[in-house]
Image 1 (cartoon, rainbow, N blue to C red):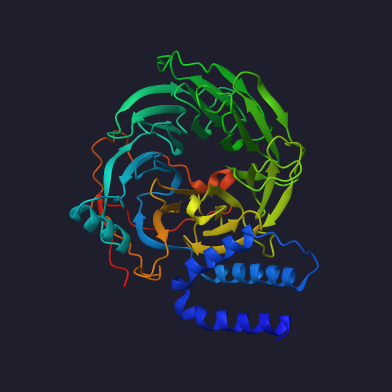
Image 2: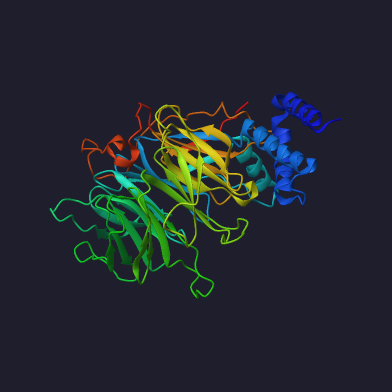
Length: 474
């Protein structure tokens, strides 16, 4: 049998059985792709090498037809989502809303040893566990723009358009510290765009005016005395994303001392001690989101470490660590007549999925991109109207996506879970908020007004309830 005929027959067989058995085939496809990627053919012009490349393409094609994740449940929110944060050590998710509210949920754990734990494990996987609201409060008088957990997860930092940064217990929501964001030169509030706890000692805050403030958390700040230890302006436009670089091999603390920011059409690297080190060339497109990935194959000048940057036109650019002047590779994630929807957020997937990043788009889709082949291998839809503004993976590997007035929890597609289309909205029957002291009649910031959410649209939905249950998806 000729090579071409053999390939044709294998494609027909694979595609023919695929629709009915995709969830059973998916583990084999992942193993197949791993084996193919790990194999390095010696004879570059041989028929065997051609078959190797063909099998690789076929595997990627079939993976594109699968659903990488299924929806476990949908959590309705009482206002549009501005930001979300995922706890680094526990299955906990916090959300910041346009109304100024901050709400923290606990997801059911998938781990356990006893019979009772095994029952809870099964319930969480099949959609019958419980998600509890740990606390909810009106944290900011304006919108809550950004959230971030401390390195140990014990503290949740929030910043809002009221010009305040608040540090609260992630367990109870009780405020432990407050910082006033420095005003702009004209005396107006410089609204925050991102917040990140670099270490137990250092908090980073980016703002609309392109300022990047560094706070020493060891200093007991008060509302009137707070001053950043350092302030930089790495970009001409607002800071859209911040990604810490791994600590050096000689680091004694294990915490990062350098980070990459995106703002406008440039990328910049800043050092904790030396300030802004380098700024990229103008990329002629807006850079919106970023994430760091290590452990990639190293060859030539490549050390196997790349920064992955999402752009406003649906393109991911790869940047070799240490070569910050210009991008190294481009991946077209989304294309349409307008050039592509913005990649609003990027998150590195758990190791068991391989070298994959999840990209949340302004059209409501989440696309999964395999780095190396640099191809989209799967996608899911968070919402058909609202864009994805929050995306990440919890400590147990579940994906959490947020946008509009919903947060969705996903887990890897399995045989005993439904097709992902039967997720249930558990609507609100009350909106009790004991901590709220401000009237909801105060002006809320519409997420559509933000520069980095230009393509978002809003729609009416009911508010969230304080205890939510997964429902059977079948």
